[in-house]
Structure formats: structure tokens, C-alpha cells
Image 1 (cartoon, rainbow, N blue to C red):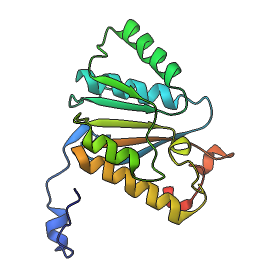
Image 2 (cartoon, rainbow, N blue to C red; image 1 turned 30 degrees about the horizontal axis):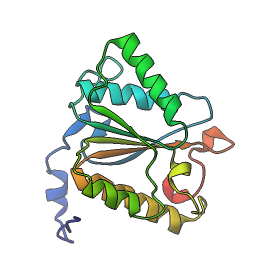
Image 3 (cartoon, rainbow, N blue to C red; image 1 turned 90 degrees about the vertical axis):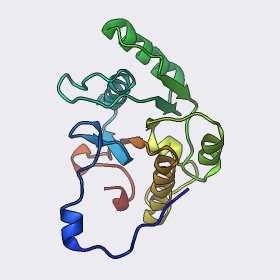
Image 4 (cartoon, helix red, strand yellow; image 1 turned 135 degrees about the horizontal axis):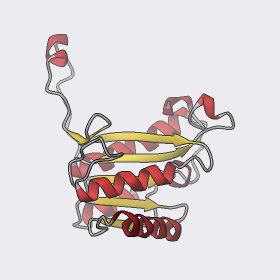
Length: 187
């Protein structure tokens, strides 16, 4: 359930607020939504899997960013079998456990059906990867600020269910230097 904050805050209260609790120190807070963007073949999924393995085991990400251990849901709409094989390969290489990682077919952010299902399923997750944003928004116009803002709001709803961090994996546009493909609101 969503909670509403007081609509008016004193600037000093905002400035002096406690810093966020980190899922990956200095990179990802425990709660919220973020987007990992890169071109085709740039290693987006590799980075996402490495994050998942570090979080599921409470080990440092990239050898220098401590993590807070948590359960991981990897929603692999684009290539679940390939992602599963890559997670197992990471496990075999690193010796890290896959016990706290589960794969799912993908989470649609085009409506609330999958989010409502996850809310009712009884499992709890601390870190959720949705790979990829384009596969998670079927039927939506990726260039529409209105439609993509609604999809991102649904990702925030998913985050609010468990107080989790949701990482969206997205493709860059034809010119990678211009950032994420689609609506300008995603930037």
C-alpha cells in the first residue's frame, strides 16, 4: 500500500534528513527504482547478474561496494534460459550461492496484474531486476512520456510492496551517447 508524505517540507528538514540506507553502498539505495542503460552487447545483463549475486550473498559488488544481503527476483522477459545459464556460470566461477535468487518470466509494467500477483504470492524480495524495460512495457508507446511515466509509477508501486529496489535494464538509443531509448521522461 502506498503512503502519502506530508506535502510541505522545510528545506532544512530535507537537507538534514538521514541519508538513505544502501542496498549497494554508494550506488543503490535499499528502496526505489533505477535504470541500467547500455547498448546492445554492452554487458547490461552481466552487470545486473553481478549485482544480484553480490546482493544475494551479502558480498561486495565490484570488489569495493559493500552490499546489504537480500532476496533477489530476476524477471527475465527477454531470455530467461540464457539468464539462468549465466547466473549458474557466475556461481560456478565465483562460488557464490544462488539460493536467494529466483527467476521469473518477466514483470509487465503495462498494467498492474503482475504487481498485484506478486503482492499476493507470499514471497518477499529485496532487489528486483526487470530485464528489459522494453519487454516489460508491451503495447505501450516507448516514446510517450505519459505512458512511460505510468510504467515507472508501477515500478515504484512494486518497490513499495516490499521496500525493495527495482532495477530496470534498458537499451540505449541508436546513438548510445544520447542515453536511454524512448521517452525523455525516462532520463
